[in-house]
Length: 249
Image (tube, rainbow, N blue to C red; front, side, top):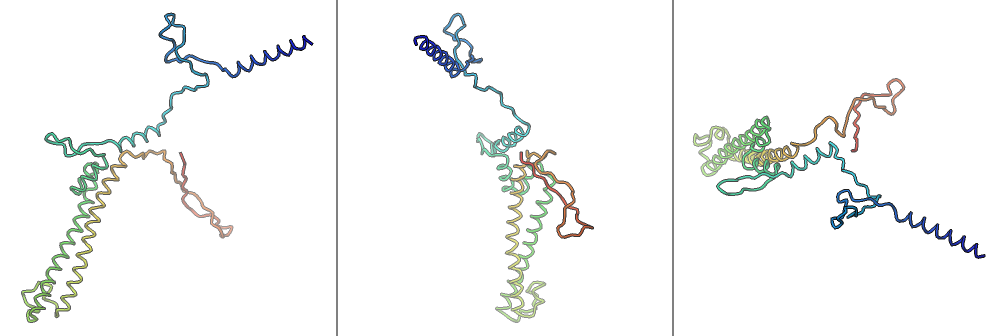
């Protein structure tokens, strides 16, 4: 019986030592600080790391580098109106382009080095402003003629009226001209504001997209293909089409 107890005790001690060794795990020294400075022999480790700690250097892909460069460019600030000791206003590149376009139409495109857009900007603004001046002059002519004829009907066809207003035969006809030219004048105020705002938006968006990734390896690809047409006979079951593939990174 005593021998049985001795065998059981030995088995329990062996099992306990195995469990303790498995739960303890191996340990390694910290390579950044391998020894304890208080130990003159230099053999005592200062810090211990578990062997399960994975130490790897991060891998930076080219896509991540381009994304970071674009983000840094969007956040990069510049100073504006810096002169005579004044530090100026800190603005991002898109903000500076939009502010320049607001102050002077076309200045944002010049800042973005999009010189070819200047004829488009000034052409659009010049057209709407020129038509606004045209309709304003016609409105003034017919409004003055209508007021004169209303006050004195004998002035109808008089040389005191404008070259176009004197051709009309009644005050009501002159009033119709007033309404027509006033309506066109008012609508071109809206067109001027629209053209002015579009060149600001163009400068802002162009500055944001200045560092945009336009390489050949993009997520969207397209290619010609043959598409199956439901309901067609066996003679022409397919038709030419365009296939677009979206690759999620």
